Amino acid sequence: MHLTLEFGGGLELLLEKSTKVHKVDVQPRDGEDKATMKGLLSWVKSNLVKERPEMFIKDDSVRPGVLVLINDCDWELCGGLDAELEDKDVVVFISTLHGG
Amino acid sequence: YGLPLKIVSYKDLYDWTMDDIVKAIGLKNNCTFCGVFRRQALDRGAALLKVDKIVTGHNADDIAETVLLNILRGDIARLSRCTFITTGEDGPIPRCKPFKYTYEKEIVMYAYFKKLDYFSTECIYSPNAYRGFAREFIKDLERMRPRAILDIITSGENFRISTTTRMPEQGTCERCGYISSQKLCKACVLLDGLNRGLPKLGIGRTAKVGAGADGSGEQQGKRAERRNRSSLQGKHGNLDF
Image (cartoon, rainbow over all chains, first blue to last red; front, side, top):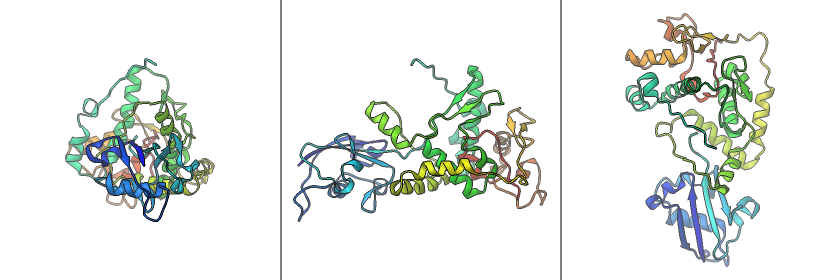
């Protein structure tokens, strides 16, 4: 499944070369037939986050303060961690945690 | 909108940059210096531009954090003022926080959809800031019950201070004329400390007033960490139990 992931608000600094946009290919986890946000999060943590993972993930979900958009829609309206992803979806992670 | 940008630096105003300050005092209490200096810098810059109002971008999350901070530190003076949407109306340049009820999340979403450019770098000296703890807590609360942020602000607005509590009075600094509730404003005290090689001047609280206080600096009697986060406030509070 091909997804486009975008990182903003400072989160891109946790990734290799601070790239903001990543086009990735993710498979559903074993035993599941659909990829969910929950699976995507652990995939991102293992494959994209190069430092300070606690800035991105806390327990099973994103760190509070990180906004998640699926196709420009707040993930809380799409099912949150259980939201199912489809091919060509765009997922955006924006951190709101920074000095003002 | 074509608004002119005026940049004011600590180096120009005080002859100390934050890097210099941190080299002199270390990584604790540096937020105190920055907050005090920043507040004054804002006022002085505004005076230079001859504006009649200062409007800051403090949002609901900021105000809720400040309410919590002031409770945790027992800062009654600031607690009573920190939820005012306008302050200093009787002073030369009143201040206002129009985003007081706007969640940080809404602002970030707006910026994202409107493709507004903003920078989001964290201050490199801030990881130990006390405000960070209040922020973590509030973010966890928001996740479970998003209205919590607005509710904390409402609680802050509804506090009433007992009439028998002694509150600081606002006067002016003897040295620079800035508003202050002490003889010398906090910025003068801190600068004094920096220039005399006494980085702890103006930091920390004496147990009782007059207990071995060695001069105007220590007589301040306030907790450093506290002074800062509320750079929202103008008046420097004092706390005397």
